[in-house]
Length: 288
Image (cartoon, rainbow, N blue to C red):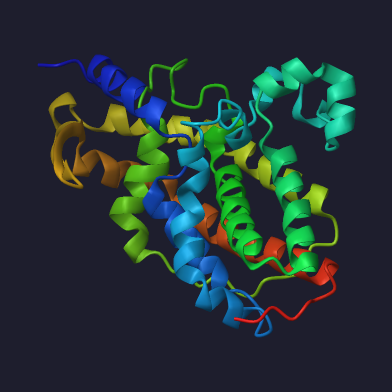
């Protein structure tokens, strides 16, 4: 019998090197849901370009193969700082407090969202359609990443807690298996009065969930016999040896709607950042 931890360690060290964020499936669903949360003045443009905005939702992950600086834009290791309350929301103040090398090494996700939001506002002002489409897709990706608890922890793949593989399990396998059951009507987008505060609220929420993400996986391991924890399954066009359907189902149940809730919140907040950038740009007419 193959030891589960050892097997999944080998498997997900490989997979973890390929995957920085929600699986492609989840990113596309989240960006699509965000489009339908927009007000009527923005909806025609986004609906016309929804194929591009949805397909480009995964461009940020693809860029890391050609841009060595990309990886740090997808996470922030909160636990590498003295405390979350001591991390300045301002990029300039964070650099002054900890030094650019340290901040960069610990991940720059919240500050990069702020930068992308500013760029999107500029694109709206200039009415540059291609830039609006690309930046809308990109900021959607990064905001979605910020809603993943493991993107706020140095133990992002359970490598420090003997839970290797939990990253892809939580953010890829569960959405692939269960997102069709989720209600992703997320309500209307809203104007964001303080973008920095909104971004850091997302980070605080995600970091607060890290312990539960890990604890529920341990509980699932304890609940199921070893032989029931892994199985061969078809993923896309390949037959892979991974978590069993039973394991994923038990873990999903113990998470008690967490994945769906984070996807819902991500979609509404993405739409809200799109809306706010457009409003601050002067609500320009953007022809579909």
